[in-house]
Length: 492
Image 1 (cartoon, rainbow, N blue to C red):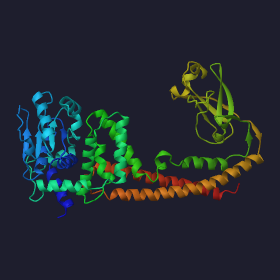
Image 2 (image 1 turned 135 degrees about the vertical axis):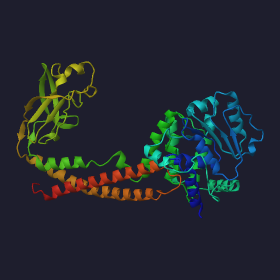
Image 3 (image 1 turned 30 degrees about the vertical axis):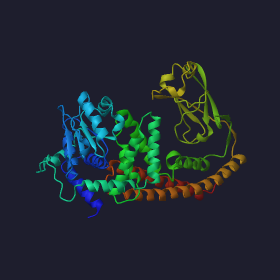
Image 4 (image 1 turned 60 degrees about the vertical axis):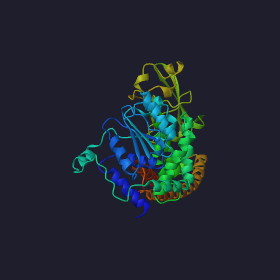
């Protein structure tokens, strides 16, 4: 039996009839095996005692010290124990506080497991051990109806822990494995993620001692070791993106940052697909505008760095200029024009309906007060929430300077030459993106059955790559559509 198979069987034995707590047991096992202290948090009835019993059973002939609710004098030979457990820990008791410090000081390499139903930040702060606890393992408050029904059909006594012979870890094995774990290499991906998580901690003013980073890194290495690898993977770090950090604010900040860090790292070869995705809709819009609009020149004014048609309207007796970008002429889409302070005027809606005449609708909220009144009060158009009820204002024509203008035709031909080049480059780039996404998905998939792989994160990573893959296929389809429109036209 390989080591990976043995640990897999051991974890399955430890997780029998403890639904939806499998990863908590896996993370607790890893943390205990590398000899780190952790806080097992959960409300009354969430299964803390059961999880502790299961974790204790994972270690063969372990000498276990249990300190319960009642006053308990800690033994002087605490360094001789293999596992130290503080059950239902109460940080308000001075004796408990003193005992936990003694245990952390004299434990040698023994893991310290603290269980309690008080919030981690409260318990650890009052005990003054926040910086000495490696991580928090929070048990779910309840189980899903499906898992409950499955549990109720079991004929076994869930309070009993049975680990088949040969699976439990002896003390000699634990010592030897920890030596081997330290030899595991940290991959570039792992180091990048640790560094970025550390940066997120700094940005959010979350203090994490170096000792804790070393301990977390040993857990990452241990996951790789038990999967039979000599180097870590991104999937070994997934637990960093769970609520292990103590305070709820810290958990929220780090887990949110971690998800972004992982997403960016697995897509490191194609960063633009997230930060600057190709706009195929804009490409199609530009092609259709060139091919489907007249070759006329219009009376325009440069505004916001583009040619615009100026319309002057009166609302509630106030004159208000509107600047309509020339790119919308003869299109059939709704849009907001620019106002005189260079902002989108959200309270006005325009549409050319495929012609050169612009239909204008005005938000009923400004019908009686005008557009300029609120601007004079220092309120920007973007700060004003439209009512959403637009009323027809009128249709205004566009003044044509020259029909079938040779200069306009020449400009469109030049634009099509540039667009053809853009289409070729975009098609090549998006095809490359598609291939890389396929490879990334396959690479993630290799970790599907890894021990200690957080399944929720794993599936999210796969889903994100799959969604980007499908979006890229759509983008390529639109690029192909634009190419065909140009190839089939005879106008230019």
